[in-house]
Amino acid sequence: MKVKDISSYLDTVIPISFQESYDNCGLQVGDPENEIDAAMISLDVTEDVMDEAITVGCELIITHHPLIFFPIKNLTGNTYIERILLKAVKNGIAIYSSHTNLDILKAGVSRKMAEKLNLQNIKILSPLKNRLLKLVTYIPESHFEKVSDAIFNAGAGTIGNYDKCGFSLTGTGSFRGGENTTPFSGEKGKFHLEKEIRFETIMPSHIKDQVIAALLDSHPYEEVAYDIYSLENEYKEAGLGCTCELPEPLTEKDFLLFLSTVFNAEGIRYTKFTGKKIQKVALCGGAGISLLGDAVKAGADAFVTSDIKYHDFFNAGNRILLVDTGHYESEKYATEILYDLIIKKFPTFAIRFSETNTNPINYL
Image (cartoon, rainbow, N blue to C red):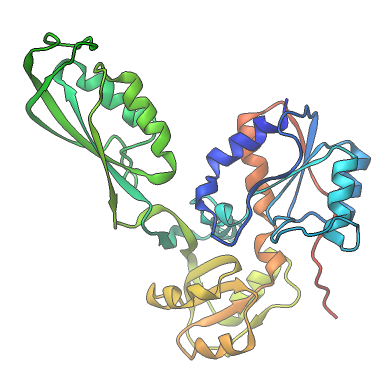
């Protein structure tokens, strides 16, 4: 197998276009054409993780947190990032990362947190905006089923739990082919009217190219007329954070103890108790304090995230129990998501979890 076989697959199932503007997801180190026999999954790339990969013979390290966030101006080994990069190149080890695009994925980090807690009724807290497109095209009646099915099979037409969603309207199209044409119907040089069906459906922007390719490949016309419109609708199939519910309400203290046990979190920080039972919970793996307002608006009794600053705790007021479990603790199960996705596609490929604890924070 080549590096690009896994990296291209992950780029597709965890769309690179989902990443935040400041992020750096995808293949960061390594030749896509290099052959690999094994890969290792870790939350971070540290020097210890790199040494572990070398020792066990893994030619690819797949992580949640990217190694390279900022431009590299020198490569002398003065920083831990430079030392890791030098060692990776010297030993032919590629590095791939899925970060905020994995956070935004519907089955991403926050949902994994909810699943570990056995929470129910999981929904995205802050859906993506400005990511939906409407496709409108015109299909001759004889080919309507073939073309519309091809568009649906390419991923268009999904709204919530419904797929193959579209709208069609019968009408009449007109055209005249030039001297260098071979019209599907009618004759070149002659004005022609054709019974057509106007077909429209929606799609997320990250699959636009594959949907258009399916349209063009299945449509009988030499020149296919289609329009694409940007929609302001929320894309509820991806976004940051999630809301969910406990099967039975817990006291605030019991809820914190529950979090500590499940995530093995030794240093949980939280606001003063509100006096309310906890049943509806908002979660965001990693640094998600920007979603505090969304959690309150959603009616959550508690919001669990990490990297909360001193003054952010004040903003919770007495409206919600705000909880910081620790960054590592909230995201460490991202490795399981990556593993499951890779094994589903490449069931016989040798892939292992790193045995190195990469949490840089210790508690007294």
